[in-house]
Image (tube, rainbow, N blue to C red; front, top):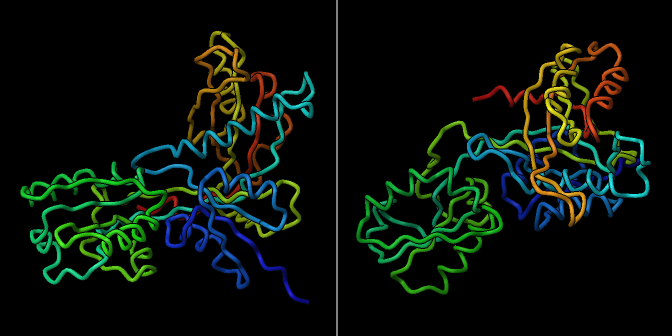
Length: 334
């Protein structure tokens, strides 16, 4: 009997770090079709609506730049929509979303300066041009700021400008097209991965150009909660990470501490906390926050998860467990 082909959605196009994360996650599966999405919202929406898609891989945070707010906000929005929907009873404060997190991946971000044409003298060839236009994803600029500053100082006669693209891989594609249509005195470059350079048959001028070595992006692997697909890896040798979101009781003093104290009572170690603003409706007041926490468990603790969940319910207004998944070993890599 032929096994079903897994369909995995990722933030495209091919050659992005998201593509690499998807390849890492499913490298042991022989029959996988990788589908490129044009945006992070599409990674969520298509997974929810198209039952032929089994998994979706989305970026969550970067070790240098912090949150990928698009992903955090899409998780937030789905919880809020559930709160407002008729499927959530008035007195129930545990929310069950339609998607869940089943794994995480970490991709080491090694940026390269990429040229659509071969530069005989490498980086020194930039001195032959009057203007250099560099393309990349907006998230990248903060990770190479020092490098770009030193480049401008090295070639003070050049005019440098930046142009945002939807992905690092698309930036290579864009600079290839732009160079063809450009005059000889303008050089179009891209900042992307070695994988993207190979994919587009471009030339790597310099690498790595990251200001900080060890720069890493974390990705989540999502699936529909009711999906029968059961590829998930249950690696009980690694700590289990739990991703939970909650809102606090409005204006109660110490309400955030009360929820966090539940973890202490159950001897659970919190490894991450973030927050995002939210509104239940257009007339809702400003400065309300939904909190994201992650904490560790193993297969033995807590002995009674239902008691933990009851305690969280008692101290929060609404809450949602997005998933429990093994800590990826790449988390510990520098």
